Image 1 (cartoon, rainbow, N blue to C red):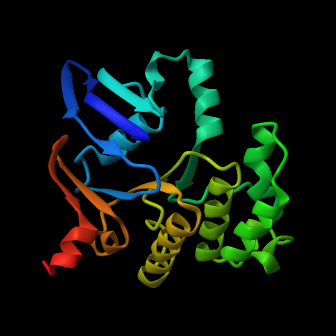
Image 2: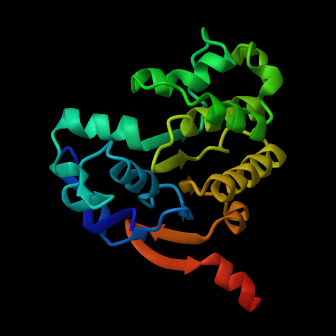
Length: 232
């Protein structure tokens, strides 16, 4: 498995109280899969994503990425692992306003101090239909266009896994569907592993798997493709 958790538990201190955000989470994510993590606000889904991505050390338990326990690494090595092996897509795009689309896409290869694979760059840009936008700045783009740039930026350094945290939360319904359909195509075209957090259950048909959280527990974990094939 590309990504695996063992007894993952997260407890926050809130004054004199302790809030258990996640309890004994055991999941595994296969290479090339598209996994949705869903649940109501407060269910623990964003906390889980941050644990999986190496952003937030759990209270107990382990996260293994490519058989490496990421929280056994030092902070600096974990940050390096995250820069190299993880791509992020955020709700509010997080593009650099002073950089062009071209520069925003390439920023992860610069951060990693690696040469951009120009053939791959052109393939991604063409696939995401960004060819005519490369010289533009984020402020001149629509929300959907900005999110497509964010998708390209998440892919350019060829990460093992892409995490998307409510990537459609700042978009209208139609554009939301377009972006998730695009991510599904990206997953299939590039065999890219994607984990997406959302509260919008209408989007999950585009994934391979849906993990549902409630109060920090997994209450359902299903293979959506098998469900569709069975006609359920």
